[in-house]
Image (cartoon, rainbow, N blue to C red; front, side):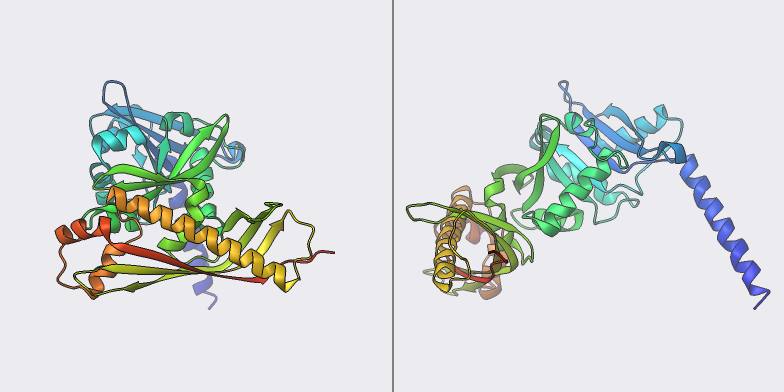
Length: 361
């Protein structure tokens, strides 16, 4: 045992020294952004942390231009004192302009093929120029702007109304017949950067957006989630605003197998607690709770039906109804789906249960 212990210690020291040497000899990008220039060149920006004890949280941004995303990395590496590698990349941004002119399939092809990048890397769309976002100073001085924005999107997905997505989920949806997928939207307002909604991508291009006020409903339709905030007004004389925090929420689908009269019934179920109420009534009153449940149910159903009607008009299917209908109707082709989907009867039924109201006097 005495002989083994020194060997383990020496091996650990050697490994740690080797790792330090690797970090010192390369530029490890933690975020990448792509803009389209006025002369239709692709401009890539790489956020590189500086690994020095006295420069904690410091970083540099290396940029270059080319006609392809893969060549941008090579050009930046040629200008830098160390090669630019992507093994630590957590997030990749694209401007709306570059997506609309080049297309997401082409832009993500290199990312998907790059062995250094994992499938869980976050993708995001920037409203405006990526350069304006990536050169914004992070409010947290201990992290660079890339890590800050990756954490911003992650916490929105875990504790807010943002639907989960990453490179793997996006490609699975985008490469299916029809190519219906979604990605988070970022926007700079003054000196703040915020999640401004969800970009809906159909057959390679952005065709619509889900606004922030619709994100709770959209996430509930897309996936089950335990967290989320929903605000609405009671339909009475006071028109008081109520904020409900979701504890459990999700949706189920009842699909008809009738070829002549296709239909889908979506059942949304929300269990939550009142986070805030702009009313003086005691919320332990069961009659008042029933009133809140009824108002939230009506508001949710109206919002969900409006969203789905908009999807049908644009013939986009970001919530995956095609797969659910196909499970009951195996012979249906994508071409047949495109014909029946815009006029299909799709109804949303909502069930709301307020489990907790908090403590108040």
